[in-house]
Image (cartoon, rainbow, N blue to C red; front, side, top):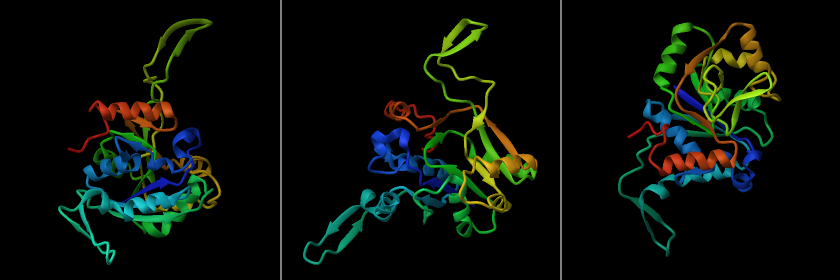
Length: 256
């Protein structure tokens, strides 16, 4: 089964990091967050990736083109320019398709333009800027059990500093804890190929008309994930994820 990853957005709210590179290439622990996401899928046996490129996609192309340069010993003959890689090959036995989907294309358009590369089989889909410890095999089993076209992983909103609970006009508590009775779209979708019938206009966002039509037709199911989930939209969130990785407590590091 292939895994589609949308990695073409501009990441304007993380401008300090994304002025010169796409957000999926912003590093956590010295590795792009895109790599962390792919390692998560790989842990559960999914190693075929179709990556939708857009804003500064050349950075992602170079990263994977030169991947062995980062992981193996090299001998370079300066006379001929020949480069020979030695030592063990990369631990990641992935097949990665890098597909140009346009600089300004919305998420619906990126998904639509990946259709020829995903074939007529079930596939997974996520964004290139969020990590989680969701059990992807359990997610897939849930999807198979209900027989609908689409499954989204529903997650609790991450904690926000100084979240207030009020009773009338009186503040009852101020807490950093997430609202446990609230659910949001956490991506990590499982989709049947019929989903492309719902993206008939690739100029709009996936979260707009396509999702609305799936809901109207009762074809979107929610897999509830009570564990860790965190997007990386701001510098505060980037620093938070970096701290978890540095301290050895990153919940999304499910691989050995």
